[in-house]
Length: 83
Image (cartoon, rainbow, N blue to C red):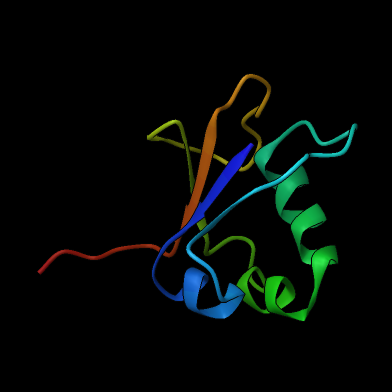
């Protein structure tokens, strides 16, 4: 599965995207974030406040409890403001 990171999430992780093999038992965006945080301090830092980071599955914004089965791409980004 392709994961894409934007803005300070990308800066904290140190890469714009990556292809990962998601382990079994990872069903939702929240599960994925918890698993990512186990991959190193850069991921822990990027997702230190899980409620702040937003997600989109295949270009559609989703909530943390959204199921990721069948997703081709999941993007993570901080909240944005207009102006």
